[in-house]
Length: 160
Image (cartoon, rainbow, N blue to C red; front, top):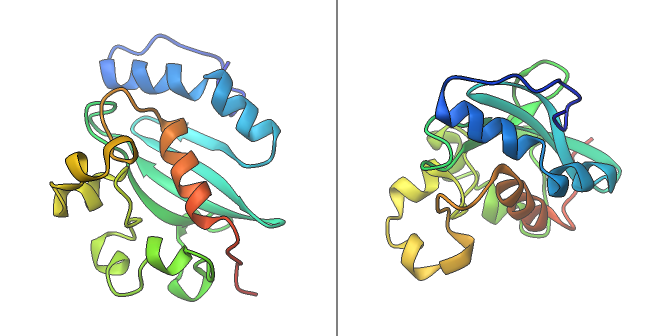
């Protein structure tokens, strides 16, 4: 069973199979139980996840094409409308503006400016060496990605 309660089926695509296993990981299930982050739904290659910010939840859409060789490509997501989260509703304060940069993220598909994100990594090939364990590598999982985003948004607030 996956984090979103779906029964496991055996996918034929190796990327889909790897993602399915990682979505059912004990670490991801524990994070959801603890109220830190979790999965709302998934249909390969897309995962819709949530990250707790205080008592609110912010959505995150992950494009997992090429997973786990390629890092997921994330963007803030509106869980009510199932669309990109408007800029005026992006998390604020703490490190939020450094991670979801108004001067960079909108022109890069809403991507977080983190070394675990495919879009950010493509623009910064040196990050893999310079940032070590924070950078995506094929041993990382969706849990690692969500954990980095969650940690980066700790202390942020959600407008209105």
